[in-house]
Length: 286
Ligand SMILES: O=C(O)CCC(=O)C(=O)O
Image (cartoon, rainbow, N blue to C red; front, top):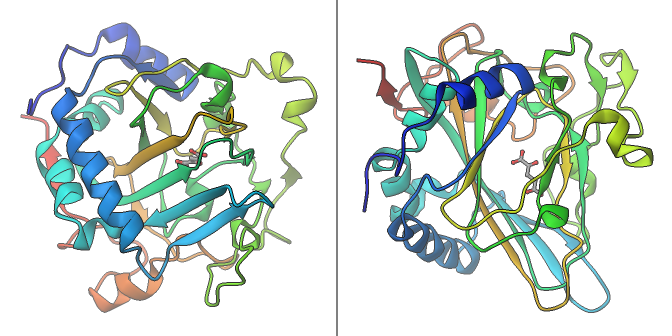
């Protein structure tokens, strides 16, 4: 498999990421990387972590499965994190000097699943703080624009903290010890009703093929995805990357995923640059 991107990321794409907080990068990963992630995901679904959860289950049994930080027991994910061009992509779009890996998360919708991810930003839920954080969202199957993750371009620059959805509520099986977040008293305003008039927010999404990816700043408003036709599933692998300004932060509103315990076990404390074998340094600008 190719350890470099299949093509060079253009200056225009880097400028788009900076301006909009999101860029779709077509044709970045070769088919071998998709096979590797597919194999890893198969293992992941058969052997989920304790953190895994069904987010949605309808009467017909169609599901949306989520898991996170499975990389520690899935060789294929490790190979992707350490060997694939993902870290270099994060480094390029964030114009970073160094990139640490943060965590992986998978979003697996069975055919016809109608679940739509609520609009949210990522970074306010995390156990780190910084502008230079980025997710790489990769569908492992073709996905149409109307079923893919959608974004409000430029919303990563918004200064205020939004009152955001508690993803811990997505728990139809009543799993115990689920991370909870409550922005009451912390958030300054509610997320606007983006679905009421998506065009006025400039909402953007793309038709995508395996090998394409979206890089997005973790402060951007994003949501949607899903509402699948009955013959179509959606398997997505995401990796989260930390650029230059990122520091550990433990948040009073709770965190999701809450890394505060494992960070403390690894000797990491608020204000530190995330590191150690938990958040390995994967890429440096030479
Ligand atoms: O794919 C999805 O439905 C949600 C993805 C997401 O919110 C994320 O990667 O932060």
